Length: 265
Ligand code: KIV
Image (cartoon, rainbow, N blue to C red; front, side):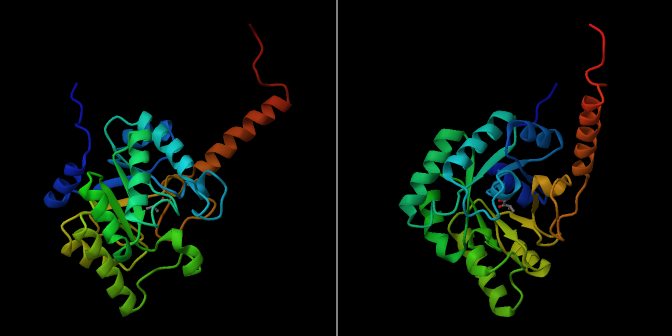
């Protein structure tokens, strides 16, 4: 039996060069990590959307470093070959490159993951360079930045006017020049994402950014139909909400009617 080799930062760079698209998916525990890999996923993102999907918060802001470490370590235990990326939570890296290094070093040491992701373009370029020069693989995140939701006032599309599109393009250039390994482009016009993808040497990872990015990322709950409402750019490929509720309904009815457990020894 042959085993596919582990995904590394070099795999991502090669895929970009060879025009091979990669599939990224969020994961927050060992079993979903293993299922995602079995489904052909190359990169497991332990996103801080954890706050909304699993922890019941209404944004990513309250998510703590300890929570990210706890879930990332579980994902690493469940993966065999996928590259695992941990989101640095709000407040754990924005103060200074030194703070970001301390946080990223702790994440790598305590989880065994492969890379960290942080939000921000031009303002975070010095931090990304500082981490990269010290051996840390950094994924950047530009366009819609959910950790800034309080300032932005919502999760709407970014890059609606020319000035904002220019600024996003400068953000993408800045993080690439600072040696980010890849850049997530969230909720921006497809044409802008295509232009960024053509221009940059590093892979772009789209979510709500059209079909031309080098990779696509989705949130586990959206892909599988577990979310109450999906964003318009994230169609569900299954309806697990209905499947799960139906199974639980049938089992609880059987318990209440005395049909579970079945009789016998
Ligand atoms: O936290 C997350 O799930 C993310 C993706 C939306 C890219 O950052």
